Amino acid sequence: MEVRELEPKVVWNHFEDLNSVPRPSKKEERVIAFIKAFGEQLNLETYVDPAGNVIIKKPASTGMENRKTVIIQSHLDMVHQKNADTDFDFNTQGIQSYVDNDWVTAKGTTLGADNGMGVAAIMSLLSSDNLAHPAIEALFTIDEETGMTGAFELEKGILDGKILLNLDTEDDDEFSIGCAGGIDTNSEYHYETVKTNDKDFAFKISVKGLKGGHSGMDIHLERGNANKIMNRLLDGISGLNLRIVEIDGGSLRNAIPRESFATIVVDADPKDQFSKVASHIKEEFSIADPDLEISIEAVSLPNSCMSRNESVKVINSIRAVQNGVYRMSMAIEGLVETSSSLARVIVKDGIFCTQSLQRSSVESSKMDIAHTVGASFAMIGAKVEHSGSYPGWAPNPKSEILEIMVPLYKELYNENPRVQACHAGLECGILNERYPGLDMISFGPTIKNPHSPDEKVHIGSVEKFWNFLLEVLQRIPAVN
Image (cartoon, rainbow, N blue to C red):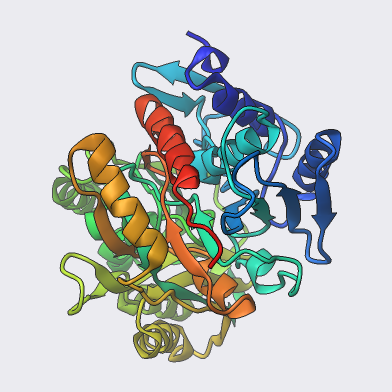
């Protein structure tokens, strides 16, 4: 079956239309134009604010004019990740989605269900002519995945709604009423290269096949971090006078790194020693990452490399850096409070740099882990910068919209939803700063493995999510 034939067809067709438009973070010009044209073609009030966020307003359907206006929000950009052996250009090609049993996924790339399913649902509401709903303010934000600058720079005074439905949660039985804040920690260290010796041996090391995933929602699953694994491999053979030539590990700041590649120079063939280290690592990750691939192959000797002393510094700094869960919440059982993910490691042309993302629902703990990570690199003399800090979203268990949605869910599905905060960065906390007093909740269909080429969305959950959204809109209370 083709994706466009799935039910509800209106949602899936809008999703496919959206996925035909390249929409990487920081390069949303085409998708902004696409959504703007969509609103204008429907003859709806459409506005693009100075940041690039698109706002489309639709009046209430007949009989719903006295209900409260609802802001419905999703972000336009998507994480671009692909497998190393996938030939795909995100800047020019549309996502190639297909049906895989009960799921929709993509061919070797991220699918864009995060947050494309939310965008498609909003488009379906805007294009409908027979659905009951209050006045809707559709808010399509930009750059959520690499800094949430759309939410940060959202123009004030253009929205009137007091209820906000964020469609960016990834389990169809979950309502998010709070989220973590985040901050980026980046480092840069300059080093002098030295010449290699004719008697040296050069090798390329590859780490591939890891699951990766969302560095917030999946951080507790103990999946392998390609940058940390590569560093263990280098450390394991460092006694052979190892010197680093290049490292290229990870890709995106908010994804658990799946791959890393390094070129090294050593005094002797390291394969026996390397095999022992690799075997131990693969055994450790045999459950969490059973498809982990580690390999080493001889390559041509380069002319220059990092010195032995500098290589030791780099390896020690990466070894010392905190990665993974830092602290569990004492307030909400099972919730990760604070974490860090070493997303990017690059050594090339005299520069060693790293990118990492720290998250926490507690502001002081967020800054503590950020400075802890930064200290690992500052100790070798690297320049460390913290940027892109955004706030968390404090839960409101007495939310009016929550009190509407929980009993509705139980009425429809004969079970209670899971009401909780999440360890991902949602835009709700920032939007509440721009528009204080918003009554907010986040929900969505079931999406697995976001931010990785294994991303997929459950077909049945999309229909469930869509039908539930329509029921929620019919229950929106009247203006007092």
